[in-house]
Image (cartoon, rainbow, N blue to C red; front, side):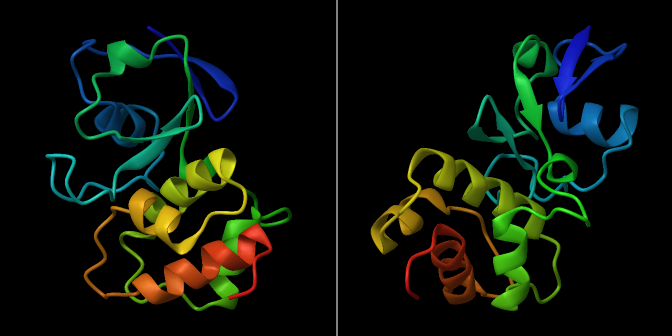
Length: 150
């Protein structure tokens, strides 16, 4: 099966029903996307497919053929971080950090579609669960990355 992951065309041997999460982690060694709940409730596995935030633990890999898949590894680089990554550090968002890749991918999808989101927009889009409870810092980081005053 042909996949487009982080801008690279890749060939993988996988059952089309296999969840995208396991293709990313186990077959492609892109381990930044995390397994959390396995039922699309927590958001730790969030990636972007054609710009939309998607829970990869329940997304069959066969359904993403021909679409652009972006994982946390494709969001930014150490030399050129994404504005959200810069804001995440500035606002000291992470505590344990486990949910952060999914949070960042959901936030990136939000900013792609609403570059200047309101707090209500952020609340609606950010349905990821953070056991550390850093939601206020997540909101501040998204506002910082959008250029809005926190």
